[in-house]
Length: 256
Image 1: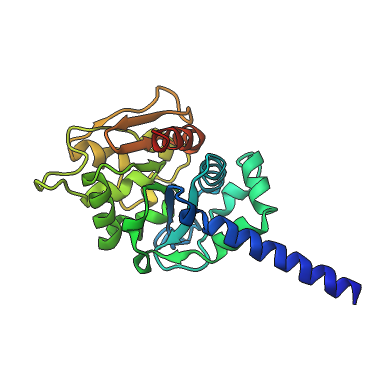
Image 2: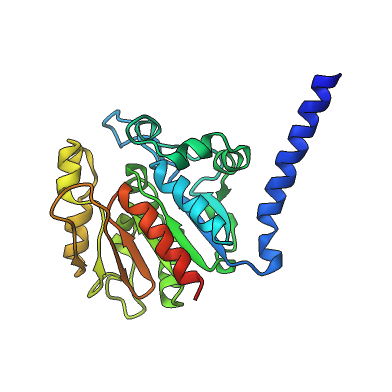
């Protein structure tokens, strides 16, 4: 009986904590939507993928600790796949370890909202983590593309890290031009894909696409260095090491 009572109390605490985080909007806190891929495979290659864990965990804690409500969504809803490689050393971080032991955070990850079911106009900013999965779903999803176009047009921050800027491939400005035309952006470099020996498995090169669409693409001289670019409401980060920097920049921008 004692063990049953402890289990019940633990459940109550988790549920209470969950509702406490989701009720922040009622208190006037700004809301950030983290948008993830629902794809766990790299096409027909047989290679598994998903969202890169650090690019979810660190923004989640950075934004929440800054006082913002954070809501997770994925294209299909439910359990958003995480790249298994990103859950192993040396790619884990203090925040990924913390996330794995955080019942509320794990509940949110395993029960993400279906993106198209949300009223995205209720959010003040977007944060899109990377990972190769989104090349196969979010990058060609009309709802996701229009959401980003609308946020950009309304001057709401759109933060995208690693491969997430791939979603900008078909995004347009109100005048019909590519959204990134004339903007300074970054994203996962060809050299970083090449170092992982994954370039041949991808649907398209992120770096080449951004340049072809008229963006002023900037990357670092060496792979894996943290690097972000901010041009108007569009905020981009190059790789996993850039996620903490980008999350802090977004938190600071929302505080203005």
